[in-house]
Image (cartoon, rainbow, N blue to C red):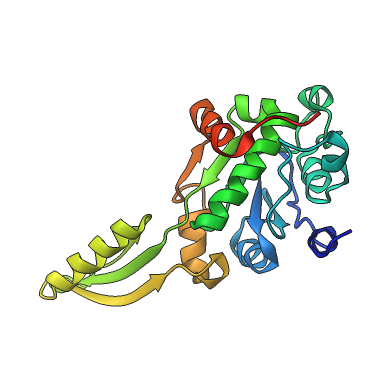
Length: 231
């Protein structure tokens, strides 16, 4: 067993106190991110599972390898699925959560990890995708806390792409008579975000950006990362 598998085997689900309707499981990159999200979640109905390292491509490999890879049995058990690799049995199971939230870093590694997780779900838990239970959370790449010079009113403004971040900084710099920049955040991982920012932008259902994974998005993932399916 390689080092990544040993590390993943040591990862622990930070479970919620309740399960079922309106409960959700966050899947995040690593222990630091998991700890940060757990600290700001609603522990009654939000659980957190860390994913350590880049997952096995479950689309291309054998069922036996998928079953032996620690992350996928952990994820199946957390979701309440009876098997990591039996799609028919999983379709009939009563889920422990209503939503699976993929909360990953907004960089190339995070995109790749998200794609690999979606490939696993498409092959072994396709009903979760078909029924709209899988969502991608969009963390900001940068943010500014600004105060209006005339009223003193404070506002947090977020950028979700590098282009938006540049435009945000340029707009603030061009209007010093209108805005005072109180604080600036640059994204260096979920654990680097101040707790109130992490809660507002990524965890709180009322304020975060999260989109249901669509069939078109799933097909794009298969086209880019899938290839020929395993046995």
